[in-house]
Amino acid sequence: MENFNFYAPTEFVFGKDRENEVGSYIKKYGGSKVLIHYGGGSAVKSGLIEKVKKSLDSAGIAFCELGGVKPNPRDTLVYKGIELCRSEGVDFILAVGGGSVIDSTKAIAAGVPYDGDFWDFYGKKAQVEAALPLAVIVTIAAAGSEGSRSSVITKEDGMLKRGIGYEILRPKFSIMDPALTQTLPAYQTACGCTDIMAHVFERYFTNTTEVEITDRLCEAVLLTIVKEAPRVMADPDNYDARANIMWAGMVAHNNICGVGRQQDWNSHALEHELSGLYDVAHGAGLAVIMPAWMEYVYKHNVMRFCQMAVRVFGCQMNFENPGATALEGIRRFRSFLHSIGMPINFAELGAREEDIPVLVEKLGIGEGKLGGFMELDRNDVTGIYRLAAHSEV
Ligand code: NZQ
Ligand code: ZN
Image 1 (tube, rainbow, N blue to C red):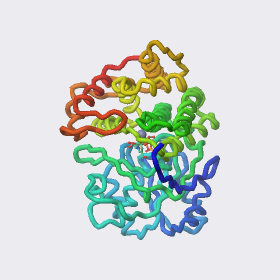
Image 2 (cartoon, rainbow, N blue to C red):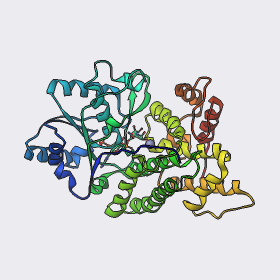
Image 3 (tube, rainbow, N blue to C red):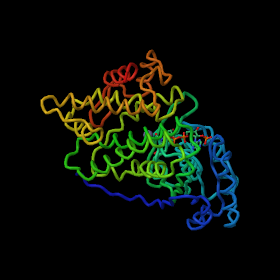
């Protein structure tokens, strides 16, 4: 195991109706003028935004609002949010929604105290050194942004999707009411479950040895999704299944599963080019990319893939032919994703094989390599996109 620091100071406020307490938590964390930031309408339609306003009113906290965050959140709205916060004297931002709303909130929070263009952070031209405090009411179990240090924004001009990660961007508190996720369309629920599994696999496939504790934590999250996702697909109002998935989504990505080990993240890099170019859901893109990535790299450490196959997907270990066990695990993973309604190839996702050179170009590897579990050059990523284009169950 490698040396590490783990400091994830977000306060999680979990359970039924906890959103009604938001006003008192903002007070606790020093907010006096709040920007309520939300998405395309689900939080208004469900009555959640009204509840939030009521709670802020009764805590005596002033607020303004900015809705309209799109999935794969855009830089254009971030600029608006920054201006609004400055003109209204906002000192605290509340995200009400999923990963897209939370990431847009983090970008605004970093942009307000910065003199330059906030995109400098995402273009790796500047470091985030200050940010407004922020908090979350999460409405979909997926990105894990409610507990993470990351934010992913798409630059509308060129649809360039880029991410950053800073400790200062972790939410002060995150309210997690599983009942809020009961209004999700089945497709979004499945996308979320896929993203949660992907966040674990990005950490699970490592070259670091002797990491039993984090391996076992990863497997616990994966087994939870394998059990609970079908339950929630069959019965969307199943609170307990929703609750387990919601907490799994947080555990998968606040890095408790990833400390002390090298991580990969190449499936996410390849996926971000897909959701950037076609504006598809991040989880759906991962369902197409991640099993293809696995097929491409499994020989790098066959036994690690066998471990996944046996412990997570219940495969019988074939000691004569470990490669067969590894491939069977990957096959079961892909067919699980398909069974919950995820696309598994380019056609089902709405991507085009002839765009592969564009996807590879946008990754910006040049003559270099992407680091991680197995280093990947341009030919490798082309090979993975090709496998993903034609996958079958
Ligand atoms: O906009 P509204 O109307 O709210 O609809 C949203 C949106 O269409 C809808 N939705 C959310 N909660 C709902 C609901 N509909 C009904 N009832 C509810 N309770 O779901 C759709 C998807 O929402 P979105 O926020 O985009 O989903 P998700 O949480 O999957 O976030 C995806 C974004 O997060 C990024 C992704 O790249 C993508 O841009 N990621 C962020 C990460 C992070 N910050 O740590 C890590 C991830 O790997 C990921 O890259
Ligand atoms: Zn993700």
